[in-house]
Length: 294
Image (spheres, rainbow, N blue to C red):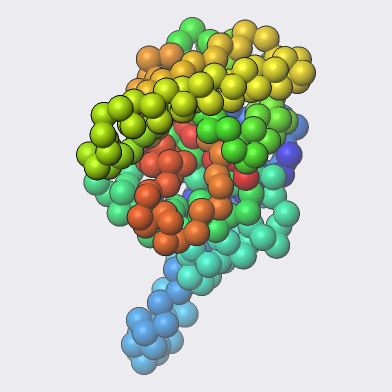
């Protein structure tokens, strides 16, 4: 498997190496580490007036990044034999996106260790752009506390769409579910927007909810059949009613899951602005690592 991991060489988290190996088989993977030195044209024009100080400044950035990434590479080499790193200069989001597209990667790992408020800002500026535009699967790397006694569980959210059902097989390929996780939980969250309850008669909303529950039963039965065809055992199907993001984040903690998996549907920008994105919401809200399958 070919993996790209963009990092910020100025503030690497000490747990990065340990967390990286929780859900990925690194022994049989190639890992490319990418650091982008952000190019600020206006600032560069100013500092260049001082005897080429701008070039020297970028040279210092590059030297520091080389030292940090060389050390990171040495640490990861103990669990992943093939590790490379690259330092580029440009606009961060666009440069990372171009590297993903040109590099033909199977998985993009996005470290996420910021404090909640700061993470929300950074997530919106860089990580959100990567997740939304990345044509490959994203793994949001977070502290992996949900691996008690070495036991790992996985939570997979499905909504019955073609994307989410196809994500089951792809998840198995990327994360080797059978060998990596003791328990496999497949969940469908029945969600009827509160606006429906607010503007419709109780009888109507109750009928709609009942139909959604029956549809959920079919979706989960289909998922269990597909998992069996993949040779996966220890599969438990779960039906919940509520708001998908909060329900799945809560279940991930209660079920001691090391990984939460959701499918991305490539929702266009206006739809995401109005309705919100479940996959993006879970990526920010869940306290464990999250894979967004594409």
